[in-house]
Length: 179
Image (tube, rainbow, N blue to C red; front, side, top):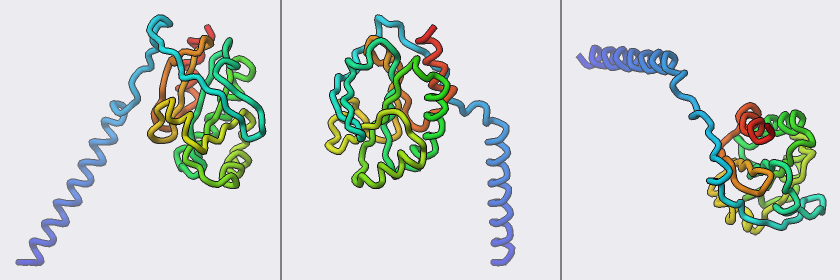
């Protein structure tokens, strides 16, 4: 009797797993990020101002980036999704070159050697701020990483992406800002 009950439970469990997998595959297209909508300029709020120094010693500020869209990526050197999205940022930098500014901000990264390794491994060529005190992350309300902010040429927040980004996703916003 006990053996029959065990076989029945294993069979029922297997059927349930197969049903969930088939359901997920047949409804995968319904699990997508919502369509990106950009607020009109009149509805955008000013991005928090900042004045920081990059790991290479250059001064950066929100005011310095005015005139072109700015993509700010908040990441941590130890964060797996941050590592996975780094190639997307490299593609973004290659695609938009001098038409946008790109800035990465390292948060919750305690060791400079880890940050330097991240920059080297992922071939980061744009400015990187090491936000050791958390001041910049706090002013931009960054509770986790990665988070990417897209700022228009006037210094106003256009879009905030929670989690890992893709180059096409950010590119669709930038294309509209640059049009």
